[in-house]
Image 1 (cartoon, helix red, strand yellow):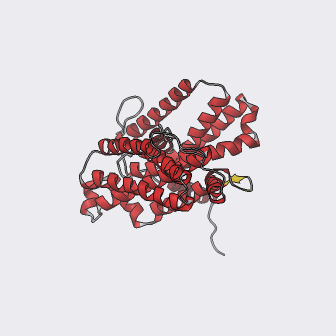
Image 2 (image 1 turned 90 degrees about the vertical axis):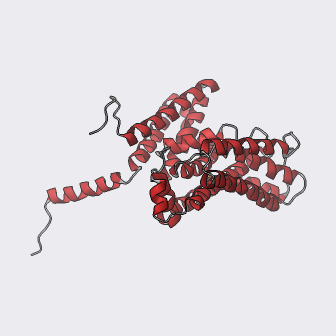
Image 3 (image 1 turned 180 degrees about the horizontal axis):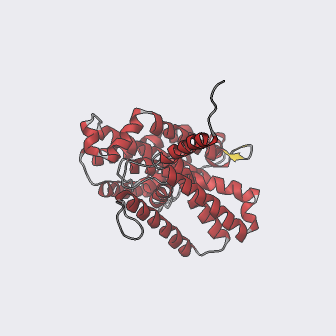
Length: 345
């Protein structure tokens, strides 16, 4: 008769499985972020019964999309130990270039391709400045941020564009990135989730993903191990530029026009989505699944505080405090400092 496992042994095995799951780098932060999403939704639902209404939830899901996209790009760059301050300006440039071309009679598909090439060029420049010339990422991407904002303003001669029109292809573009629906799910949400799945797979199961984590953990050790730091850094910035380009198309599709102010403060939104989701600003750790929670926290705060009639200034203060707290906690955790001020043994 085969021996059966005792209940204590089974409990130990189950506990070890849970411990292994929780031991995945960044998983505890991800769970905390998703718990924050649930807590915020409960709080705002108690404050306003309309918060959990179908229309508001659908609107909320659509508002998460640009935050999620810039969070993916910024998160991957942060994992390399760098930062991309040009995200918001690339988003604005994307919205203005695509809208300007469409308003001037260019086929919307061609406009999107030209727009994508322009945005990816910025990613290459960022990669060269940071990865090849070793320019501090804050300085390098601050420069491209300013340049891209200027290009966004010059795209239509320092004017916002007019309406992109209701021609079939233009309307199809708006439906794809914002207004279209598959059942109760907006097509823009589906596009963002597809992009997330692709990059999450790259980060989790490919050599490029391993190299991105490696240079964020220890760039010198990664280089000695044969990792091409320049190519990997450039790849991270290309992903960031791609995500910003798509986010720009989402913003343009929502407005039906190009605005020179599009993308303002989105570099902060990207950092917020990444760090709230548990991605370390020091590089080398974090999971992209956390960006979904981070982007959701940001959108829920904006939506819930707006429904509660909290002034914009107070909203910014509250969200700013949350971002600083998340970064501070990450630094303390990585350096082994407890809240009481003593280092862990």
